Length: 484
Image (cartoon, rainbow, N blue to C red; front, side, top):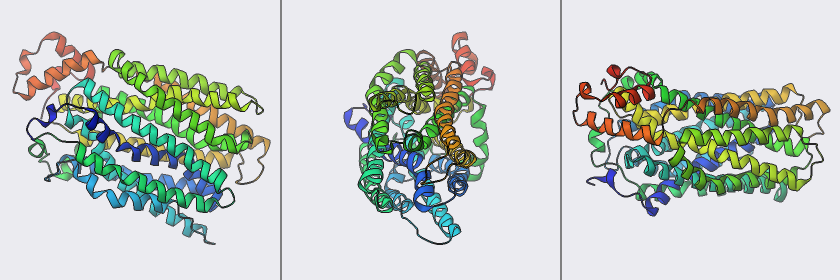
């Protein structure tokens, strides 16, 4: 166990860590693209109630996500602070995902609402239990900027492979194979993908590690005190910008994903090509990922995000102006264009997470990667829930009625929502990314300074260049940093 954090990150470790996001990358995509559709068009819930399922379920994450981060930071077990949860989550991962897609046939809409609310809360709880420690793990495995980028790249590679499978197979089963019986199609999706998302956690557990002193580093604060201090995380300038970029990027992706099936099925009237359009987008994301990871190590993660956001914004505008009779090959090509930009926009925020944990430690003098990860994920889930709920209200407002020919007003509303909402959010994200201060060069400066302070170095002996970088990244005077 000695010097575990200095172990080489080889292909085995990259694959072992990365495969954990087969669960995160796939399960959340299926939910964002099909769960609202499943609840409205298969179960028959009103759009407002369907959106309320997601909103109320995610409200639970306001407690569970940061709480899990604090629990993870203070866990003591023979398997470490993070990895033990991968074992405990094996059976719950399968059960919680499969139950989401069971078709509850009842005359009472309230009974159906309660069932899907409870199962969604269960899913959110289980995903929190494994994904919060998982997101915190790279900060434990290595302190090297490029090695962390490689770990994040491996994670996103598996995430996008999973997203490709999740974005094509479930939609194909429901829209084509089981078009006459979508309830059965969704049930098969729940069982097969539930197994697929469970098995990788064994590989993550056995193929990753934590530092030898991880148990001694576990927070000695009481859980209540740790939870109360979560508000101090947003005092850090770079972390605030980081969270803003993350939320805007994923809100753009959520709106795009949620309305993609409605846009293709109703506005274009070609529901059977939905799988091909989504597949083209996801394949393009996957192909571009190695390039963006290479680029991030050279020009920085913030600038790489900006490039991706610019591409997504241009493609979004294209979908606003194309006519309904646009040839299918062009639609598929434009869908791939989304993937070219989204690959950077969705991968960079996760690649930035270990650096945010380090800047937080620089500011507050204690390592809290679990809390940083928990707060990060909490913000994402709350915004996702709010967005999906608002989108469900928007569907009702434009006059959308499930499983019937839509009115001209509803069709135009679907077009506007699908094309303009992602555009607005990625443009805002691009503007914010221009202010993101962590670069490969500035990270090396704070890495060296952190090591000096951890070893008992005096704050008074800091040089002027290091002081300036620390102040830029934390947004605080140097005299206020590293105060335990």
